Every structure is written in structure tokens, then in C-alpha cells.
Image 1 (cartoon, rainbow, N blue to C red):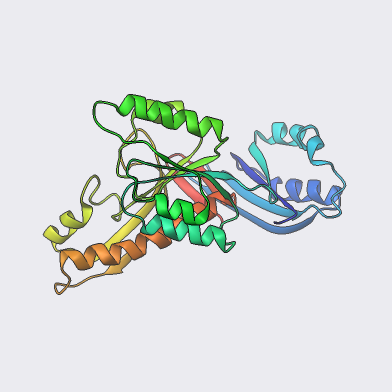
Image 2 (image 1 turned 135 degrees about the vertical axis):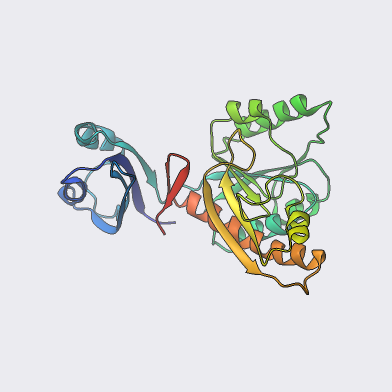
Length: 284
């Protein structure tokens, strides 16, 4: 685990922002490892990610709000601090398709994803064997049209009881209701098996095959009330030809989905993403 802190900042752009942030960290003997910033929009909105070492940093992190607060107020900053030692608690939702699930479990086991998986929820029993192998508590909650409100209420109870920081829909083939999304205040990341905004909704590979497209894609995005319309985190594409069958498209799509989702999850848990309007600014 990193002994670092990450400062995320959003505010109207003005002179002296970079220097003020850097001087504050320097004042307490902090060593900046990464300072990435971006101005966006016609109004030149400022977004930044600053990571520095905590070894030798003379300000106790519990006193950071009091020390940095006046600076943030002066510049009108929307800001937050994350510690590199913190391991986010991630809940995985999955249905029958397990390729994204297994990829996430493997990457977390080998240290690529610095998070914990205290909870797996599925509407089918198929993924239980993977949960058992990796030691992740598994909860089977079947979902039908008739019981969906009750099923989602049970899911929300589990998320609250396990102090979940972010939900990942790893090919969870159920549309979360607006009530669920409005009730759950933490981020939800979904993987959609098309290059959004093309082919939203169900069976995008079938739609792509019927249209004879030459590129297929996958999109990881944050979930909002509008289906497949949340801020896009990462996308990937693969070239196809007239020789590819529908089954070929699905197979190539699975490889894309695994890579795209794992990148999105990693960037999120490493605090590399800032939201601006309906877009993401990602500091790689």
C-alpha cells in the first residue's frame, strides 16, 4: 500500500492555483509525486489531481481540513482527499456471464486492484463457484418483475451492512431501477458490450452484426437514471470483417469488456477520475 495522499480539486480557473497548491504541500515538507491539471470548457474550469508522499509530511491528516480549508474557500474549490493506504470496499453484481467477474477477481488477487471484495451479489447461482474459490461472500438474490422492489431492497441492505464504497456491474443483466440508483449514493460502474452511444440496450452484438459494422466496442461508464447514458470512463474497440460471425463478435467483445472494465475500476479506486458535467476527466 502507498503511503501517499491524493488531492482532487475542481474550481473556476484563475492565476496562482498550481502555485498555491504546490506551496501548501511544500510548506509542510511534502514531496509531490504527481501534479496533473486540466482546464476545460469555455469558462476554463480547473481540475487537478495531486499526489504526494506522507513520509516526512509534517501536517497530521486529521488537521488537513482546517489547514487547507481557507485556501479552498478563497479559490472556490470543490475538493477531497484520499489516502493511498485506503482500500475501497467494492461490491460485484453479476449474472451468468462470468468473464468480467473472473478477470476482476484475478487482478485483485495478484495486486493490480488495490481494493477489497467483501460482497458478491447475483441473480443466478452460476458465479458461486468463483466466489467460493476467491473467498468472496456470495449472495443469491433472484430478480423477477414481481419481486424486483423486494430484491433491490435486500441488495441495498447488504451494501449498507458491508460499508460498500462502489458497486461494479460485471455483466449484471438487470436494469437497476431509478429508486435503487436514487437511494444508493455511492458510485456504480457498469460495463456495456458496445461502443456507446451506439447500440444501447439489449443485444448490442446482434444489432452490430445486422448493421454490418467494421468496429465493435465496449464501454465502462457510471450508472445514472438514464439507461447507458452515464459519464463514460473507458472504451475499447476491435476491428471485424464480413468473415466474422455473430459468435465471433461476441467472443471478441468479451476480451474488450474485461480490459475496459478493469481499467475503469482501477482508475476509480486510485482516485484518478473527476466528473465535469456528464464527462469524465481521467488523470492516468
